[in-house]
Structures are given as C-alpha cells and as structure tokens.
Image (tube, rainbow, N blue to C red; front, side, top):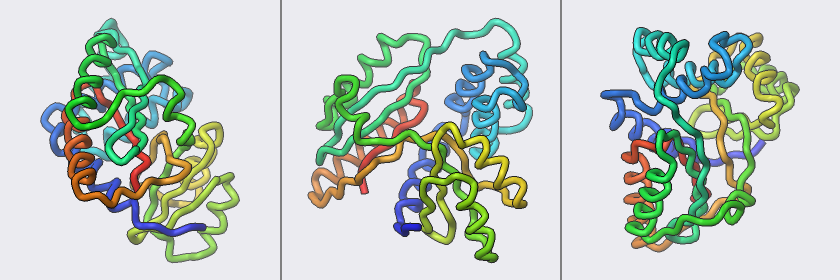
Length: 234
C-alpha cells in the first residue's frame, strides 16, 4: 500500500468544479441521460448506477435525479460521448471526457482552449498510454485494520492512504465486485467512479507553468461539454 497526498488536491478540484456548476448540475444530468440508454434498471445497468451515485455525492437533489431518469425513458436530446487527449504546460498529460450534442463544436472549442493556455490537443494514442483506466473508490480510513485486509482481498490493484482516508484502485472489470464487497463490509464510499489514472506523475516546479495549469484546469471546469478530466500532474 502506498501513500501520497494527492487526494486533497483532486478533491478540491472536483468540489470547485461542482460548486461552479451546481446551479444546473448539467454534467451529472447528462451522465444519467447517456448511461440510461442501456436500461433504467440500476441493478442491471452498472454505469447508470455509478452516474446516479455521482450525482447524489455532488448534491444533486433527489427530484432532479428522478426527473432525469423519467426523461431518459422517453425521447430526449442525443448526446455523444468522446475522449480527447491533450498535453498541458510542463508536459502534463490530460485525458478529457466529453458529452455533447455536437462533437465538431466540442473539438473546436477544446482545441482553442488548449491553444489559449499553452497546451495542445493531441492525436489519439499520444497521451493515453501514460494512463490506466481504473475503477476508483474513496472511503474513510477504517478503524479496524482487518477491514483493510479484507478490502485487499476484493481484487484491488492498489490502495493509497491519503488525507485521512483510503483511495482504492481496481480493474474496470472488477469494479462492481469491489463496490459490492465494500458494501457487504458495511462501508459507504465517499466517492466512486471510473478514472484515467496516470502511471507516473509529472511534478511541475516552474511557477509560470503552475499558473498556466491552474488557469487551464479552470477553463476545463467551465467548459460545458467537458464531463471529466484527469491529469498526470503530481
């Protein structure tokens, strides 16, 4: 089990983005709408279950979630998922997930956004090799050390202790099994989702590049079509 303090930074970025978008909760509603295409039964549609749980964690009201599910049962706006790869200042790799009704608009806006912040939108495969796709679960650190050992038996790839909690990584194919196992242990996750996790992180020491990255992240937070983004910055 390894230790680092990245969780606080990641958590602060996520909450900052959530606060900015809390008025409409657009990205969470879109996530529910897209994943609901595969069925409205959350017991059978694991992606929908994750989308609904993410919305709840972000504070989306219950009635807003229920309305989104009701609309998903009928004909609604057609949204398409897309994944983009980018390099930011300091050669920081960035994986960007979007949901959009106009992919041409999305790619043009992302290309301009990267150009404006000293980054580049890369070709497919140019950045993705730096990342692994994992199911990620964040829980409060158990008081009983035996629980940690039981969690490790659930097929995890890594467990990182950070900021008073544990962040658990597993293969996507084992994600549902991990979540069900944690639930049986009586543990309620603080966060759960699918993420692009950097194989090796990049430490940016140059102050100007640090500022450029901060402004780039803020721009991505404010881009309506951006659902999530993940970086290799340490």
